[in-house]
Length: 600
Image 1 (cartoon, one colour):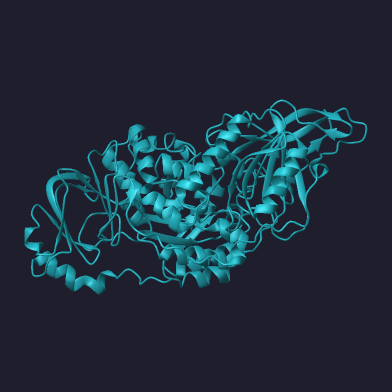
Image 2 (cartoon, rainbow, N blue to C red):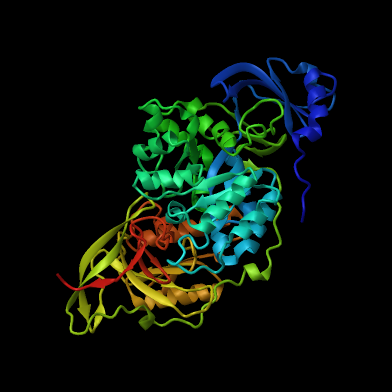
Protein backbone atom coordinates (compact mmCIF):
# COMPACT_ATOMS: atom_id res chain seq x y z
CA UNK A 1 0.00 0.00 0.00
CA UNK A 2 1.35 3.41 -0.91
CA UNK A 3 0.17 6.89 -0.08
CA UNK A 4 0.80 10.11 -1.92
CA UNK A 5 3.31 12.28 -0.04
CA UNK A 6 1.84 15.21 1.81
CA UNK A 7 2.02 18.20 -0.57
CA UNK A 8 4.81 20.66 0.10
CA UNK A 9 4.28 24.31 0.94
CA UNK A 10 5.37 25.45 -2.55
CA UNK A 11 2.92 22.99 -4.10
CA UNK A 12 -0.05 24.62 -2.39
CA UNK A 13 1.21 28.19 -1.94
CA UNK A 14 -1.30 29.62 -4.47
CA UNK A 15 -4.18 28.09 -2.54
CA UNK A 16 -2.84 29.37 0.79
CA UNK A 17 -2.40 32.89 -0.55
CA UNK A 18 -5.82 33.02 -2.17
CA UNK A 19 -7.62 31.73 0.92
CA UNK A 20 -5.74 34.12 3.22
CA UNK A 21 -6.65 37.02 0.92
CA UNK A 22 -10.30 35.98 0.75
CA UNK A 23 -10.25 35.13 -2.96
CA UNK A 24 -10.90 31.41 -2.40
CA UNK A 25 -12.81 29.52 0.29
CA UNK A 26 -11.10 27.55 3.04
CA UNK A 27 -11.69 23.84 3.47
CA UNK A 28 -12.12 24.30 7.22
CA UNK A 29 -12.36 27.18 9.69
CA UNK A 30 -11.96 26.79 13.44
CA UNK A 31 -13.80 29.71 15.03
CA UNK A 32 -13.86 31.41 18.41
CA UNK A 33 -10.87 29.79 20.03
CA UNK A 34 -7.97 30.96 22.18
CA UNK A 35 -4.90 30.94 19.94
CA UNK A 36 -1.88 29.49 21.76
CA UNK A 37 1.01 31.19 20.00
CA UNK A 38 4.20 29.30 20.82
CA UNK A 39 6.34 31.80 18.89
CA UNK A 40 5.49 34.65 21.25
CA UNK A 41 4.32 32.65 24.27
CA UNK A 42 0.86 34.27 24.25
CA UNK A 43 -2.73 33.19 24.50
CA UNK A 44 -4.97 35.32 22.26
CA UNK A 45 -8.75 34.92 22.72
CA UNK A 46 -11.43 35.09 20.02
CA UNK A 47 -9.33 33.95 17.09
CA UNK A 48 -10.08 31.86 14.02
CA UNK A 49 -7.92 29.50 11.97
CA UNK A 50 -8.57 28.99 8.24
CA UNK A 51 -7.26 25.79 6.66
CA UNK A 52 -6.87 24.65 3.04
CA UNK A 53 -5.07 21.67 1.49
CA UNK A 54 -4.11 20.43 4.95
CA UNK A 55 -2.26 23.63 5.86
CA UNK A 56 -3.04 26.80 7.76
CA UNK A 57 -3.76 29.78 5.50
CA UNK A 58 -4.91 32.42 7.98
CA UNK A 59 -5.02 33.05 11.74
CA UNK A 60 -6.78 36.13 13.05
CA UNK A 61 -9.71 37.55 14.97
CA UNK A 62 -12.09 37.03 12.05
CA UNK A 63 -11.71 34.51 9.22
CA UNK A 64 -15.17 35.08 7.77
CA UNK A 65 -13.59 36.36 4.52
CA UNK A 66 -12.19 32.84 4.03
CA UNK A 67 -15.56 31.15 4.34
CA UNK A 68 -17.36 29.53 1.43
CA UNK A 69 -20.58 27.52 1.05
CA UNK A 70 -18.75 24.19 1.55
CA UNK A 71 -16.31 25.28 4.26
CA UNK A 72 -16.39 23.00 7.31
CA UNK A 73 -16.88 25.06 10.46
CA UNK A 74 -15.62 23.86 13.82
CA UNK A 75 -16.72 25.99 16.77
CA UNK A 76 -13.90 26.04 19.31
CA UNK A 77 -16.33 27.44 21.90
CA UNK A 78 -13.64 29.37 23.69
CA UNK A 79 -11.29 26.42 24.02
CA UNK A 80 -7.55 26.71 23.60
CA UNK A 81 -6.21 26.00 20.12
CA UNK A 82 -2.86 24.30 20.66
CA UNK A 83 -0.34 23.03 18.09
CA UNK A 84 -0.30 19.26 17.72
CA UNK A 85 2.24 17.75 20.12
CA UNK A 86 5.65 16.49 18.96
CA UNK A 87 7.65 13.66 20.53
CA UNK A 88 11.29 14.60 19.96
CA UNK A 89 12.80 11.17 20.64
CA UNK A 90 11.10 7.79 20.78
CA UNK A 91 11.15 4.18 19.67
CA UNK A 92 7.88 2.87 18.28
CA UNK A 93 8.95 -0.71 18.95
CA UNK A 94 8.98 0.02 22.70
CA UNK A 95 5.21 0.36 22.49
CA UNK A 96 5.11 -3.30 21.35
CA UNK A 97 3.13 -1.96 18.38
CA UNK A 98 3.69 -1.41 14.68
CA UNK A 99 3.77 2.21 13.45
CA UNK A 100 0.12 1.98 12.39
CA UNK A 101 -1.12 0.75 15.75
CA UNK A 102 1.17 3.14 17.62
CA UNK A 103 -0.33 6.02 15.63
CA UNK A 104 -3.84 4.81 16.37
CA UNK A 105 -2.98 4.73 20.09
CA UNK A 106 -1.45 8.21 20.37
CA UNK A 107 -3.61 10.24 17.97
CA UNK A 108 -6.41 10.66 20.55
CA UNK A 109 -3.79 12.00 22.99
CA UNK A 110 -2.92 14.88 20.66
CA UNK A 111 0.41 13.62 19.31
CA UNK A 112 0.58 14.60 15.64
CA UNK A 113 4.35 14.44 15.06
CA UNK A 114 6.87 11.81 16.14
CA UNK A 115 10.62 11.60 15.63
CA UNK A 116 11.34 7.91 15.74
CA UNK A 117 14.54 5.90 15.82
CA UNK A 118 13.80 2.28 14.79
CA UNK A 119 17.10 0.94 16.04
CA UNK A 120 15.36 -1.91 17.82
CA UNK A 121 14.29 -3.54 14.56
CA UNK A 122 17.63 -2.58 12.96
CA UNK A 123 19.38 -4.91 15.39
CA UNK A 124 17.11 -7.79 14.35
CA UNK A 125 16.51 -7.20 10.62
CA UNK A 126 19.04 -4.58 9.59
CA UNK A 127 18.35 -1.97 6.92
CA UNK A 128 15.41 -4.00 5.58
CA UNK A 129 13.69 -3.71 8.95
CA UNK A 130 14.29 0.04 9.08
CA UNK A 131 12.76 0.35 5.60
CA UNK A 132 9.67 -1.58 6.69
CA UNK A 133 9.17 0.71 9.70
CA UNK A 134 9.76 3.78 7.52
CA UNK A 135 7.31 2.62 4.85
CA UNK A 136 4.49 1.97 7.34
CA UNK A 137 5.22 5.29 9.05
CA UNK A 138 4.82 7.13 5.76
CA UNK A 139 1.29 5.74 5.36
CA UNK A 140 -0.06 7.30 8.55
CA UNK A 141 -2.42 10.30 8.84
CA UNK A 142 0.00 11.99 11.27
CA UNK A 143 3.66 12.94 10.85
CA UNK A 144 6.05 10.11 11.69
CA UNK A 145 9.57 11.21 10.83
CA UNK A 146 12.26 8.54 10.87
CA UNK A 147 15.84 8.84 12.07
CA UNK A 148 18.20 6.31 10.53
CA UNK A 149 19.63 4.11 13.31
CA UNK A 150 23.31 4.76 13.92
CA UNK A 151 24.53 1.96 16.13
CA UNK A 152 23.85 -1.68 15.49
CA UNK A 153 25.62 -2.95 17.45
CA UNK A 154 25.40 -0.14 19.97
CA UNK A 155 28.84 -1.01 21.35
CA UNK A 156 30.98 -2.93 18.84
CA UNK A 157 32.88 -5.78 20.45
CA UNK A 158 30.54 -5.85 23.45
CA UNK A 159 27.58 -7.64 21.81
CA UNK A 160 26.50 -9.47 18.65
CA UNK A 161 23.46 -8.26 16.72
CA UNK A 162 21.38 -9.93 14.05
CA UNK A 163 22.59 -7.32 11.55
CA UNK A 164 25.05 -4.44 11.55
CA UNK A 165 24.47 -0.89 10.34
CA UNK A 166 27.21 0.62 8.19
CA UNK A 167 28.09 4.14 7.11
CA UNK A 168 26.95 3.11 3.60
CA UNK A 169 23.54 2.17 5.01
CA UNK A 170 23.29 5.58 6.64
CA UNK A 171 24.22 7.37 3.43
CA UNK A 172 21.57 5.41 1.52
CA UNK A 173 18.85 6.13 4.07
CA UNK A 174 19.55 9.86 3.92
CA UNK A 175 18.06 9.79 0.40
CA UNK A 176 14.71 8.36 1.53
CA UNK A 177 11.71 10.68 1.97
CA UNK A 178 10.76 11.11 5.60
CA UNK A 179 14.27 10.53 6.96
CA UNK A 180 15.10 13.54 9.12
CA UNK A 181 18.45 12.58 10.56
CA UNK A 182 20.63 10.06 12.34
CA UNK A 183 19.28 8.17 15.32
CA UNK A 184 20.86 8.43 18.74
CA UNK A 185 24.62 7.97 18.56
CA UNK A 186 24.89 5.45 21.38
CA UNK A 187 28.48 4.53 20.73
CA UNK A 188 29.70 7.59 22.58
CA UNK A 189 33.12 6.06 23.31
CA UNK A 190 33.50 5.61 19.54
CA UNK A 191 32.79 9.29 18.89
CA UNK A 192 35.07 10.39 21.72
CA UNK A 193 37.88 8.26 20.28
CA UNK A 194 37.23 9.43 16.70
CA UNK A 195 36.12 6.02 15.44
CA UNK A 196 36.12 6.29 11.62
CA UNK A 197 32.77 4.54 11.12
CA UNK A 198 30.94 6.65 13.70
CA UNK A 199 32.35 9.87 12.27
CA UNK A 200 31.52 8.69 8.74
CA UNK A 201 27.88 8.14 9.72
CA UNK A 202 27.74 11.60 11.28
CA UNK A 203 29.39 13.14 8.23
CA UNK A 204 26.91 11.48 5.85
CA UNK A 205 24.05 12.91 7.92
CA UNK A 206 25.52 16.40 8.07
CA UNK A 207 26.23 16.42 4.34
CA UNK A 208 22.56 15.66 3.80
CA UNK A 209 21.70 18.67 5.95
CA UNK A 210 19.99 16.56 8.60
CA UNK A 211 20.13 16.33 12.40
CA UNK A 212 22.43 14.01 14.35
CA UNK A 213 20.80 12.50 17.44
CA UNK A 214 22.81 12.02 20.61
CA UNK A 215 23.08 9.54 23.46
CA UNK A 216 25.73 10.44 26.04
CA UNK A 217 25.20 8.04 28.94
CA UNK A 218 28.10 9.10 31.12
CA UNK A 219 28.35 11.36 34.18
CA UNK A 220 31.70 12.72 32.90
CA UNK A 221 31.04 16.30 31.81
CA UNK A 222 34.71 17.13 31.21
CA UNK A 223 36.87 16.71 28.08
CA UNK A 224 35.13 13.45 27.11
CA UNK A 225 31.80 15.22 26.92
CA UNK A 226 33.34 18.09 24.95
CA UNK A 227 34.82 15.57 22.51
CA UNK A 228 31.42 13.98 22.03
CA UNK A 229 29.76 17.32 21.31
CA UNK A 230 32.57 18.25 18.95
CA UNK A 231 31.86 15.05 17.02
CA UNK A 232 28.46 16.35 15.94
CA UNK A 233 25.53 14.99 18.02
CA UNK A 234 23.04 17.81 18.40
CA UNK A 235 20.85 16.60 21.26
CA UNK A 236 20.88 14.23 24.19
CA UNK A 237 18.16 12.51 26.24
CA UNK A 238 20.32 10.56 28.71
CA UNK A 239 20.57 13.28 31.34
CA UNK A 240 19.24 12.47 34.79
CA UNK A 241 20.02 15.61 36.82
CA UNK A 242 19.99 19.39 36.50
CA UNK A 243 23.75 19.56 35.84
CA UNK A 244 23.31 17.26 32.84
CA UNK A 245 20.66 19.49 31.29
CA UNK A 246 22.69 22.66 31.90
CA UNK A 247 25.88 21.16 30.46
CA UNK A 248 24.14 20.08 27.28
CA UNK A 249 22.46 23.44 26.70
CA UNK A 250 25.62 25.40 27.46
CA UNK A 251 27.50 23.35 24.86
CA UNK A 252 24.92 24.09 22.16
CA UNK A 253 22.98 20.85 22.36
CA UNK A 254 19.26 20.45 22.87
CA UNK A 255 18.57 18.85 26.23
CA UNK A 256 15.81 16.30 25.70
CA UNK A 257 14.18 15.42 29.00
CA UNK A 258 12.04 12.31 29.06
CA UNK A 259 9.04 10.86 30.76
CA UNK A 260 8.48 7.35 29.49
CA UNK A 261 6.83 4.36 31.07
CA UNK A 262 9.77 3.94 33.43
CA UNK A 263 12.09 6.92 32.83
CA UNK A 264 11.22 9.84 35.13
CA UNK A 265 13.88 12.37 34.19
CA UNK A 266 11.82 15.56 33.79
CA UNK A 267 11.47 16.64 37.42
CA UNK A 268 15.20 16.47 38.13
CA UNK A 269 16.21 18.46 35.04
CA UNK A 270 13.47 20.99 34.33
CA UNK A 271 14.73 23.01 37.31
CA UNK A 272 17.36 24.38 34.92
CA UNK A 273 14.43 26.37 33.51
CA UNK A 274 12.08 26.75 36.46
CA UNK A 275 14.69 27.58 39.12
CA UNK A 276 17.89 28.57 37.30
CA UNK A 277 15.96 30.62 34.74
CA UNK A 278 17.89 29.40 31.68
CA UNK A 279 16.53 29.97 28.18
CA UNK A 280 13.94 27.21 27.56
CA UNK A 281 14.38 27.21 23.78
CA UNK A 282 17.01 24.51 24.04
CA UNK A 283 14.98 22.08 26.10
CA UNK A 284 12.68 19.50 24.50
CA UNK A 285 10.20 17.06 26.02
CA UNK A 286 10.15 13.45 24.83
CA UNK A 287 9.10 9.96 25.89
CA UNK A 288 11.94 7.69 24.62
CA UNK A 289 10.16 4.45 25.60
CA UNK A 290 6.45 3.99 26.29
CA UNK A 291 4.79 0.61 26.29
CA UNK A 292 1.23 0.04 25.11
CA UNK A 293 -0.29 0.05 28.58
CA UNK A 294 0.97 3.57 29.25
CA UNK A 295 -0.23 4.78 25.85
CA UNK A 296 -3.74 3.39 26.20
CA UNK A 297 -4.31 4.11 29.89
CA UNK A 298 -2.27 7.24 30.66
CA UNK A 299 -1.40 9.09 27.48
CA UNK A 300 1.60 10.08 25.43
CA UNK A 301 3.04 13.56 24.99
CA UNK A 302 0.01 15.08 26.73
CA UNK A 303 1.10 13.07 29.77
CA UNK A 304 4.63 14.48 29.51
CA UNK A 305 3.42 18.08 29.18
CA UNK A 306 1.08 17.72 32.16
CA UNK A 307 3.94 16.25 34.20
CA UNK A 308 6.26 19.14 33.28
CA UNK A 309 3.57 21.60 34.38
CA UNK A 310 3.11 19.72 37.66
CA UNK A 311 6.87 20.12 38.19
CA UNK A 312 6.47 23.90 38.16
CA UNK A 313 6.91 24.68 34.48
CA UNK A 314 4.81 27.46 32.98
CA UNK A 315 2.19 25.75 30.75
CA UNK A 316 3.16 27.83 27.72
CA UNK A 317 6.84 26.99 28.19
CA UNK A 318 5.99 23.31 28.55
CA UNK A 319 3.99 23.48 25.32
CA UNK A 320 6.90 25.16 23.55
CA UNK A 321 9.08 22.23 24.65
CA UNK A 322 6.63 19.83 22.99
CA UNK A 323 5.99 21.80 19.79
CA UNK A 324 8.09 24.60 18.34
CA UNK A 325 11.33 23.69 20.14
CA UNK A 326 11.16 20.19 18.68
CA UNK A 327 10.25 21.37 15.20
CA UNK A 328 13.05 23.94 15.17
CA UNK A 329 15.60 21.39 16.30
CA UNK A 330 14.89 19.18 13.31
CA UNK A 331 14.71 22.08 10.85
CA UNK A 332 10.96 21.71 10.44
CA UNK A 333 9.67 24.90 12.05
CA UNK A 334 8.21 25.93 8.68
CA UNK A 335 6.24 22.68 8.59
CA UNK A 336 5.05 21.84 12.10
CA UNK A 337 5.17 23.05 15.69
CA UNK A 338 2.99 26.17 15.57
CA UNK A 339 -0.40 27.44 14.44
CA UNK A 340 0.78 29.90 11.82
CA UNK A 341 0.29 30.33 8.06
CA UNK A 342 1.82 27.69 5.83
CA UNK A 343 2.30 25.10 8.57
CA UNK A 344 0.56 21.76 8.56
CA UNK A 345 -2.84 22.14 10.16
CA UNK A 346 -2.15 20.06 13.27
CA UNK A 347 -4.41 21.44 15.99
CA UNK A 348 -5.62 20.36 19.43
CA UNK A 349 -8.71 21.80 21.11
CA UNK A 350 -8.54 21.67 24.91
CA UNK A 351 -10.51 23.45 27.68
CA UNK A 352 -7.46 24.07 29.88
CA UNK A 353 -3.70 24.15 29.40
CA UNK A 354 -2.68 22.82 32.80
CA UNK A 355 -4.77 19.64 32.65
CA UNK A 356 -4.52 19.46 28.84
CA UNK A 357 -7.61 17.34 28.30
CA UNK A 358 -7.54 16.46 24.62
CA UNK A 359 -11.02 16.89 23.16
CA UNK A 360 -10.50 17.40 19.41
CA UNK A 361 -7.43 16.50 17.35
CA UNK A 362 -6.90 17.76 13.82
CA UNK A 363 -4.02 16.52 11.70
CA UNK A 364 -3.22 17.97 8.28
CA UNK A 365 -6.62 19.65 8.23
CA UNK A 366 -8.60 16.49 9.05
CA UNK A 367 -10.39 15.72 12.31
CA UNK A 368 -8.60 12.55 13.38
CA UNK A 369 -9.84 12.12 16.96
CA UNK A 370 -12.68 13.29 19.15
CA UNK A 371 -13.06 12.76 22.89
CA UNK A 372 -10.48 10.00 23.06
CA UNK A 373 -11.61 8.10 19.97
CA UNK A 374 -9.47 7.76 16.84
CA UNK A 375 -11.65 8.53 13.80
CA UNK A 376 -9.30 7.67 10.95
CA UNK A 377 -7.75 4.64 9.35
CA UNK A 378 -4.12 3.94 10.16
CA UNK A 379 -2.97 1.82 7.20
CA UNK A 380 -0.86 -1.29 7.77
CA UNK A 381 2.23 -2.40 5.90
CA UNK A 382 2.23 -6.00 4.67
CA UNK A 383 4.88 -7.42 7.00
CA UNK A 384 6.64 -10.36 5.27
CA UNK A 385 7.33 -13.75 6.80
CA UNK A 386 11.01 -12.82 7.10
CA UNK A 387 9.97 -10.28 9.74
CA UNK A 388 7.89 -12.86 11.61
CA UNK A 389 10.41 -15.70 11.95
CA UNK A 390 13.20 -14.17 14.01
CA UNK A 391 13.55 -16.38 17.10
CA UNK A 392 16.33 -18.63 15.86
CA UNK A 393 17.39 -20.92 18.69
CA UNK A 394 19.52 -23.96 18.02
CA UNK A 395 17.52 -26.23 20.33
CA UNK A 396 15.08 -26.29 23.21
CA UNK A 397 16.76 -25.31 26.46
CA UNK A 398 17.01 -27.37 29.64
CA UNK A 399 17.25 -26.21 33.22
CA UNK A 400 20.96 -27.02 33.40
CA UNK A 401 21.57 -24.45 30.63
CA UNK A 402 20.92 -21.90 33.37
CA UNK A 403 23.14 -23.41 36.06
CA UNK A 404 25.99 -21.22 37.36
CA UNK A 405 28.90 -23.48 38.35
CA UNK A 406 30.94 -22.47 41.38
CA UNK A 407 34.69 -22.91 41.75
CA UNK A 408 35.54 -26.40 42.88
CA UNK A 409 35.24 -26.83 46.62
CA UNK A 410 33.66 -23.42 47.24
CA UNK A 411 30.90 -23.06 49.83
CA UNK A 412 30.24 -19.43 48.94
CA UNK A 413 31.25 -16.94 46.27
CA UNK A 414 31.45 -13.19 45.75
CA UNK A 415 29.41 -12.26 42.69
CA UNK A 416 29.20 -9.15 40.52
CA UNK A 417 25.47 -8.40 40.37
CA UNK A 418 23.44 -6.04 38.18
CA UNK A 419 21.46 -3.69 40.41
CA UNK A 420 18.18 -2.34 39.03
CA UNK A 421 17.38 1.33 39.76
CA UNK A 422 13.69 2.17 39.87
CA UNK A 423 12.47 4.75 37.31
CA UNK A 424 15.89 5.18 35.72
CA UNK A 425 17.77 3.55 32.87
CA UNK A 426 21.19 3.23 34.62
CA UNK A 427 21.93 0.19 36.77
CA UNK A 428 24.36 -0.23 39.66
CA UNK A 429 27.33 -2.54 39.85
CA UNK A 430 26.84 -4.48 43.08
CA UNK A 431 28.66 -7.28 44.86
CA UNK A 432 26.97 -10.00 46.91
CA UNK A 433 28.22 -13.02 48.80
CA UNK A 434 26.10 -15.99 47.67
CA UNK A 435 25.88 -19.59 48.84
CA UNK A 436 26.93 -22.65 46.83
CA UNK A 437 24.99 -25.92 46.82
CA UNK A 438 26.00 -29.04 44.89
CA UNK A 439 28.62 -27.04 43.05
CA UNK A 440 26.13 -24.40 41.85
CA UNK A 441 25.78 -20.75 42.83
CA UNK A 442 22.39 -20.15 44.43
CA UNK A 443 20.24 -17.05 44.22
CA UNK A 444 19.55 -15.61 47.64
CA UNK A 445 17.27 -12.91 49.01
CA UNK A 446 16.67 -10.29 46.36
CA UNK A 447 19.35 -11.68 44.03
CA UNK A 448 17.99 -13.86 41.26
CA UNK A 449 19.40 -15.22 38.03
CA UNK A 450 19.51 -13.55 34.64
CA UNK A 451 20.45 -15.19 31.37
CA UNK A 452 20.92 -13.93 27.85
CA UNK A 453 19.90 -16.48 25.22
CA UNK A 454 21.24 -15.88 21.70
CA UNK A 455 18.34 -15.85 19.23
CA UNK A 456 19.58 -14.37 15.93
CA UNK A 457 22.08 -16.91 14.59
CA UNK A 458 21.10 -20.11 16.44
CA UNK A 459 24.51 -20.39 18.12
CA UNK A 460 23.08 -22.02 21.23
CA UNK A 461 24.85 -19.47 23.47
CA UNK A 462 23.45 -18.92 26.96
CA UNK A 463 25.24 -16.38 29.17
CA UNK A 464 24.31 -16.55 32.85
CA UNK A 465 24.62 -13.78 35.45
CA UNK A 466 22.83 -12.33 38.48
CA UNK A 467 20.51 -9.37 39.08
CA UNK A 468 19.09 -7.62 42.14
CA UNK A 469 16.12 -5.34 42.62
CA UNK A 470 13.05 -7.11 41.22
CA UNK A 471 11.95 -8.64 44.52
CA UNK A 472 10.71 -11.90 43.00
CA UNK A 473 9.54 -14.64 45.35
CA UNK A 474 8.95 -18.36 44.78
CA UNK A 475 9.89 -20.45 41.72
CA UNK A 476 9.29 -18.18 38.70
CA UNK A 477 10.82 -16.85 35.52
CA UNK A 478 10.20 -14.07 33.03
CA UNK A 479 11.52 -14.22 29.46
CA UNK A 480 11.46 -11.54 26.77
CA UNK A 481 12.77 -11.11 23.23
CA UNK A 482 12.59 -7.36 23.84
CA UNK A 483 16.12 -6.86 25.14
CA UNK A 484 17.60 -3.55 24.14
CA UNK A 485 19.50 -3.09 22.00
CA UNK A 486 20.66 -6.33 20.43
CA UNK A 487 17.32 -8.00 21.25
CA UNK A 488 18.42 -11.48 22.04
CA UNK A 489 16.28 -13.16 24.72
CA UNK A 490 16.58 -12.15 28.37
CA UNK A 491 15.39 -14.58 31.02
CA UNK A 492 15.20 -13.53 34.68
CA UNK A 493 14.14 -16.02 37.31
CA UNK A 494 14.50 -17.64 40.69
CA UNK A 495 14.31 -21.22 39.37
CA UNK A 496 16.21 -22.70 36.44
CA UNK A 497 13.40 -25.07 35.45
CA UNK A 498 10.99 -22.14 35.13
CA UNK A 499 13.63 -20.25 33.12
CA UNK A 500 13.83 -23.11 30.63
CA UNK A 501 10.02 -23.24 30.32
CA UNK A 502 9.81 -19.50 29.65
CA UNK A 503 12.61 -19.50 27.07
CA UNK A 504 11.16 -22.44 25.19
CA UNK A 505 7.70 -20.85 25.17
CA UNK A 506 9.05 -17.81 23.32
CA UNK A 507 10.86 -20.10 20.89
CA UNK A 508 7.49 -21.73 20.23
CA UNK A 509 5.44 -18.54 19.67
CA UNK A 510 8.09 -16.57 17.76
CA UNK A 511 8.86 -13.92 20.34
CA UNK A 512 7.30 -11.77 23.01
CA UNK A 513 7.17 -11.77 26.80
CA UNK A 514 6.09 -14.58 29.09
CA UNK A 515 5.99 -15.28 32.83
CA UNK A 516 5.97 -18.74 34.42
CA UNK A 517 5.44 -19.69 38.04
CA UNK A 518 5.35 -23.23 39.39
CA UNK A 519 5.23 -24.64 35.86
CA UNK A 520 2.22 -22.54 34.78
CA UNK A 521 2.24 -19.65 32.31
CA UNK A 522 0.78 -16.61 34.06
CA UNK A 523 0.94 -14.20 31.12
CA UNK A 524 1.98 -13.98 27.49
CA UNK A 525 2.41 -10.96 25.25
CA UNK A 526 3.02 -12.41 21.81
CA UNK A 527 5.15 -10.14 19.61
CA UNK A 528 5.46 -11.94 16.27
CA UNK A 529 7.06 -9.12 14.27
CA UNK A 530 10.83 -9.24 14.89
CA UNK A 531 10.06 -10.51 18.40
CA UNK A 532 9.39 -6.84 19.21
CA UNK A 533 5.95 -5.81 17.97
CA UNK A 534 2.39 -6.92 17.45
CA UNK A 535 0.13 -5.70 14.66
CA UNK A 536 -2.90 -6.32 16.87
CA UNK A 537 -4.88 -3.27 18.09
CA UNK A 538 -3.19 -1.25 20.80
CA UNK A 539 -5.98 -1.88 23.31
CA UNK A 540 -5.57 -5.66 22.91
CA UNK A 541 -1.80 -5.48 23.32
CA UNK A 542 -2.25 -3.17 26.30
CA UNK A 543 -4.54 -5.71 28.00
CA UNK A 544 -1.92 -8.41 27.55
CA UNK A 545 0.80 -6.05 28.78
CA UNK A 546 -1.22 -5.20 31.89
CA UNK A 547 -1.74 -8.90 32.58
CA UNK A 548 2.01 -9.36 32.22
CA UNK A 549 2.76 -6.56 34.67
CA UNK A 550 0.19 -7.93 37.10
CA UNK A 551 1.91 -11.30 36.85
CA UNK A 552 5.19 -9.60 37.77
CA UNK A 553 3.50 -8.10 40.81
CA UNK A 554 2.00 -11.48 41.70
CA UNK A 555 5.55 -12.85 41.70
CA UNK A 556 6.61 -10.24 44.24
CA UNK A 557 7.89 -7.37 42.06
CA UNK A 558 6.74 -3.93 43.22
CA UNK A 559 8.94 -1.75 40.97
CA UNK A 560 7.19 0.87 38.88
CA UNK A 561 6.98 -0.44 35.31
CA UNK A 562 9.47 -3.18 36.06
CA UNK A 563 9.04 -4.60 32.55
CA UNK A 564 10.96 -1.63 31.14
CA UNK A 565 13.81 -2.31 33.57
CA UNK A 566 13.82 -5.94 32.45
CA UNK A 567 14.03 -4.93 28.79
CA UNK A 568 17.14 -2.78 29.34
CA UNK A 569 19.34 -5.24 31.19
CA UNK A 570 21.35 -5.93 28.03
CA UNK A 571 21.76 -2.28 27.00
CA UNK A 572 25.55 -2.16 27.00
CA UNK A 573 25.84 1.59 26.46
CA UNK A 574 24.27 2.73 29.74
CA UNK A 575 26.24 2.29 33.00
CA UNK A 576 26.95 0.58 35.16
CA UNK A 577 26.60 -3.18 34.64
CA UNK A 578 24.88 -5.09 31.80
CA UNK A 579 24.71 -8.56 30.28
CA UNK A 580 25.40 -9.40 26.64
CA UNK A 581 25.78 -12.54 24.55
CA UNK A 582 29.52 -12.16 25.09
CA UNK A 583 29.52 -11.81 28.87
CA UNK A 584 29.06 -9.40 31.76
CA UNK A 585 29.92 -5.82 30.75
CA UNK A 586 31.12 -3.02 33.00
CA UNK A 587 29.86 -0.04 30.99
CA UNK A 588 31.93 2.38 33.08
CA UNK A 589 35.05 0.99 31.45
CA UNK A 590 33.57 -0.95 28.49
CA UNK A 591 35.29 -4.08 29.66
CA UNK A 592 34.09 -7.61 30.38
CA UNK A 593 34.31 -8.61 34.01
CA UNK A 594 33.98 -12.05 35.62
CA UNK A 595 30.68 -13.01 37.19
CA UNK A 596 32.39 -14.58 40.20
CA UNK A 597 35.33 -13.32 42.23
CA UNK A 598 37.38 -15.03 44.95
CA UNK A 599 36.01 -14.41 48.43
CA UNK A 600 37.99 -11.63 50.09
